[in-house]
Amino acid sequence: MVIPAPIRDRAALGPGTELEVTVDDLGIRLERVASPPRLLKIGRRLVARPTAPVETRPMVDVAALVEEERNRWP
Image (cartoon, rainbow, N blue to C red; front, top):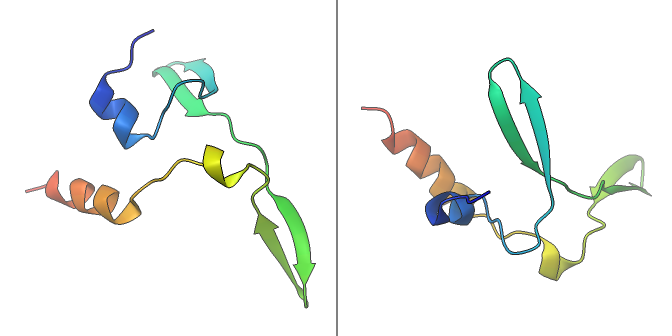
């Protein structure tokens, strides 16, 4: 399956990224497979810490995604 480069860039999909494929009544959905976070108790709170190494986590510019979404609507 070929995913166009702009979509791969926006979703931070690199070579070897694992995807889960789901089929439903509306179509096909591709989702990144992510390792679950580890819950740590810090004080009286539970804090979720990622288990994936830093170098394998996608770098996503959230502000750019929000701005792009805002610009989609007139």
